[in-house]
Length: 144
Image 1 (tube, rainbow, N blue to C red):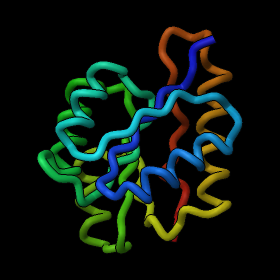
Image 2: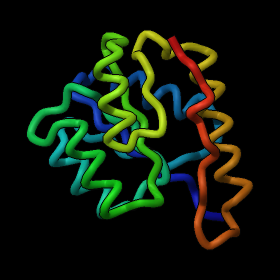
Image 3: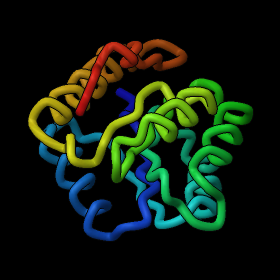
Image 4: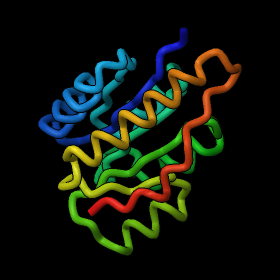
């Protein structure tokens, strides 16, 4: 059974640790990779081919929007989620336009958000015997 691969690209080490805890708390055994900047995230993504990325809007070296565009071209099967410090409508729109499937305010890292991640993980595990794992559409989640 293939393990779900998640890449977290986050400049803040405390948030990276929180994301690690959130993913581990799901109990699904997902493979988690962490990157502190956009260049490291791109290199890791091309190597591990994640099913899901969670990308900090404030990345250095390669900004979040450029990273999403690179990933959409080179890894079109990867779903990209953007994490915002402030739920700014302009940032949200720019991220969706760049190709993010969801934009989440970091303040929304709560039980509802964790439930969404669990649903994504379970869907991918159930799909693991297919040649390509597809994540469900998550645009329907309005997280504030």
